[in-house]
Image 1 (cartoon, rainbow, N blue to C red):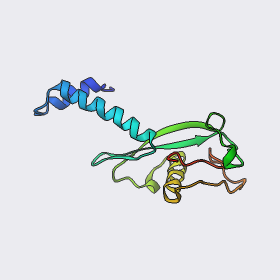
Image 2 (tube, helix red, strand yellow):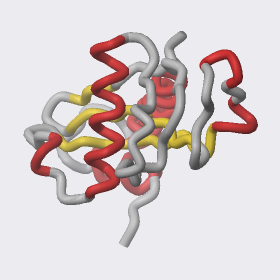
Image 3 (cartoon, rainbow, N blue to C red):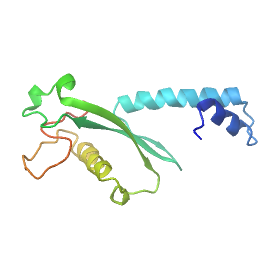
Length: 136
């Protein structure tokens, strides 16, 4: 069963909360809109005890040869919203694609610049070429 926001708000308010379900619903809706806003600004959002929300980019195969030639409409395949549960480490995640993308995000965060494709033919990842830092 998937709980919608209204049902979750009702559930929370039934657990001895001083807030009515309408107030809880309003807070959850504000959380949702603010979460999206922060993710679109390339910020990670950590909810203590739950985990961290963040975004990753997926480029079209082949990428782009030069930074100047990068075009979002042409080269960007997808913008993904990711979630990493608290306490998990990237190396313990079982999904190979998630690990590739998480490493990509970490490289971006530490470098604060561009990630350049090495040109290696062994790279089978979904990204390639230059990828702009989404925060720039």
